[in-house]
Amino acid sequence: MNQPPSTRFHCFRNDAMADNDATALAERIRSGEVSAQEVTAAAIERAQLAAPVINGVVAERYQPALTQSQRPDAQTGRFVGVPTYIKDNTDVEGLPTGHGSQAVTPRVAKRTSPFAEQMLSQGYICLGKSTLPEFGFNASTEPAQGDPTRNPWNLDYSCGASSGGAAALVAAGVVPIAHANDGGGSIRIPAACCGLVGLKPTRGRVVDNDAARDLPVNIISDGVVTRSVRDTAGFLAYAESWFKNRKLPAIGHVQGPSGRQLRIGLVLDSINGHPTDPETRLTVEQTARYLEKLGHIIEPMDVPVASSFPDDFALYWGMLAFGVKARGKKLYHPDFDKSRVDGLTNGLDKMFRRQFWRLPAVIWRLKRSWHDYQRHMNDYDAV
Image (cartoon, rainbow, N blue to C red; front, side):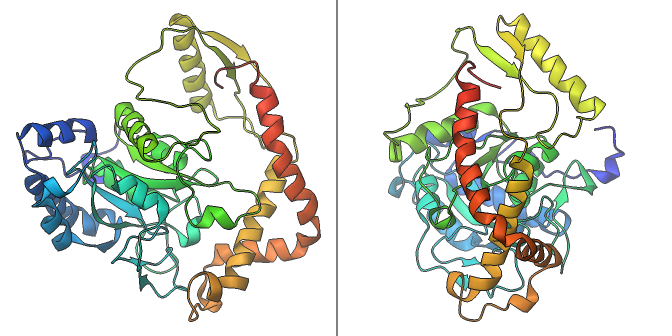
């Protein structure tokens, strides 16, 4: 980005972390070049520098993390000693979970959620919880009260959402990898805003998080945001060693191109019918030409979902807000205060109440969209 230096922020420095990605950092810790304690201390120092500028951390556990880093032999996994953050809609034992909402009084979790347990089993050291907009509904991490989480590339810009805190912390250099989850773009949007790798894994590829298990149509996948493709590939490979879904083909550890010619579908415009802006369209076309030079087959294809999908998804989003307000005391805590939810949650709730009678057909079509998408993908390796 061609922005004046004063609008940017990073905390990369000549310390134990340097500018390493998670893979390189784990290798250096294993070799003894640096210790997990040195890396953790460096990450904490960076986090404290970033805190007043980026505002990406909602709860920290720095002293327990330092204590944990002093006994790396007690940990196993490919990424032992690599610091990370868990998003604040996911429980970690001993840390409060606030879901980014003033309506929720954060309570210290008594257990670690299934996905966080799967991720931390790889040896990461959790430094705390990263920020998100209220219940992950917004596409920008800007709470109704308090400061927004800022984009390190330009502090006047949005970092995206809902995994905005995770993306900002990774982009700024506080940690090389952080937990993210995605229902409607919450990994991919902040990754795009902050220049990171953001892959939404196939549903069922990792263990379901708590929220996903109660949805009539599960749209949520948990994963990570990173600064390198190999970190994302490594995360998935070692997550698979902890939990393997027998309904899905194994991924293994992807460490380079397969050498197989792929048939790739090209979709230029949005599923909502809006034309893509010229800069984005040019980037997609350049990517397609590059893939052709690598020997792959590129074919234009139709949007792989029905024209009703955008409206159906919006109503489903409204249903989630309605459910939060109606069942907040049961979902979160008896002292949940629905009068304190933000304007977006209220707006989504009102939208759903006006159209709730459409919900049965919407649920049916959204479930059907899985089959529509699969049918469109039958002839392609990727889109």
